[in-house]
Length: 168
Image (cartoon, rainbow, N blue to C red; front, side):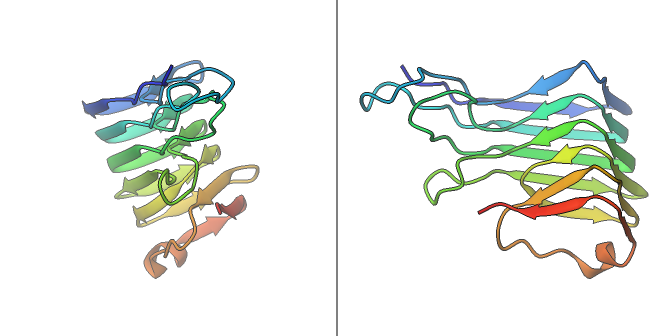
């Protein structure tokens, strides 16, 4: 069996919160643990999540990644576009990760906030950051796919206590 591909979710609100026990998921579907043929074991592709709000807090999980189980180890990442017209705080997980191959690439997690992006959690496959103030706190992790260019305006207004990592 194939893991199904995820769909799209769009949220437009004044304030958006995912609590520490909550999740918003457009993750790809799971499949069998083996990869015996062309029709079994394939992971589903991640979907597209778009959030637009004045203030956004993600203390739980926002998923747009490939399926988590499938013996064929495939599946493309989706898109997580998080857009705050004021502040964005992430203490949970935002993931749009894929296999990372040419045919099944990592997805795109774009984070935009006019005033502040404050990350104390984990963001996978970050391909874009736009803000006037970025804080990467201790024990946080911001993971970029290879060949991502960061805007110098963001780098010049950033407090770096957390870690960066590049996906292969």
